[in-house]
Image 1 (cartoon, rainbow, N blue to C red):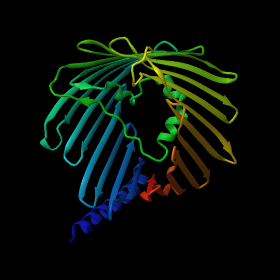
Image 2 (cartoon, rainbow, N blue to C red; image 1 turned 90 degrees about the vertical axis):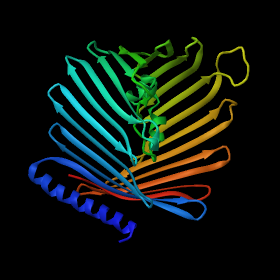
Image 3 (spheres, rainbow, N blue to C red; image 1 turned 90 degrees about the horizontal axis):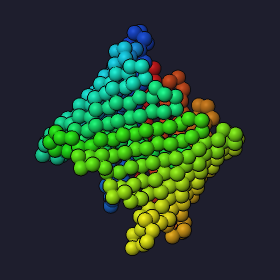
Image 4 (tube, rainbow, N blue to C red; image 1 turned 45 degrees about the vertical axis):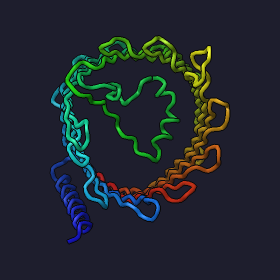
Length: 390
């Protein structure tokens, strides 16, 4: 049997096994999902690659299990397992990744008591790729949201940096919420990978992250501080206000480095009128040439979203630091039961840049979908797949 035939046999056996699990799930009362996706990618000049991804998820009461396996024409690529269980106020989760060799194992234990969360993450990772150099790290978490509208989160890393990735990589939480139109466009056709902390050699104190958030009586404010064994590293501060009628919010975000110099400045305005939402994002960054100003204008973006005949249309227009047109993104998301359709078109200063189309149909818990992406040269990716929920 050829290697390609063996891989296809494994995929088919996994699919039949998943269907058997579905039948058992109906008898024992648990829920889950199974999916299979085939992706064709051209490889210049005259070759191509076909990738197969199989996903499986199961849930029984407070126990969940997820697995994802990826093969391509060269063989096994990656395998990821995730398991989580809740025992009263304690939550335990474990994640293991092989890509294709052992790469990551993260065990998380969190306890939530009277609004106070105490957690620890034990991480073992390969930090050198194929040379198999493993390093261990620990992240301690303490967070609380006891007071209405106020919360505090602290993360302490030993052998690990970039701890903000445990919070989704979000450095400015209120900015992230108000810039939802932009981030929705980022993940419309491209699956967003969950960020991970960065592992470093040796088990020493590496980083301390402290975040304070306020969302009370219309006031929006947050402070995110990074510290290492040398002291202060970086600070991101936000302050703004939200009105209910009309639905209007404005926010200022400032980034300060270890020399207490301003390295970033953002002004955000978000306005909602009925079914129309408008967001303005003005950015300032350090100059590339000598200047008496710590930051100079670096870009302006506008995003607007509205609904027409059941279809949501979102448009983003961006200008660079020279006030010249930089990028235009236009998204259309339509859902007419049981069919969904998504289109994302990108233009740059030279004209058309890329296009992504996705169509799917859902019936009896089964979703069939196809995705195609192309640019000015031609097709860049085509995917077909199905998802079964039970």
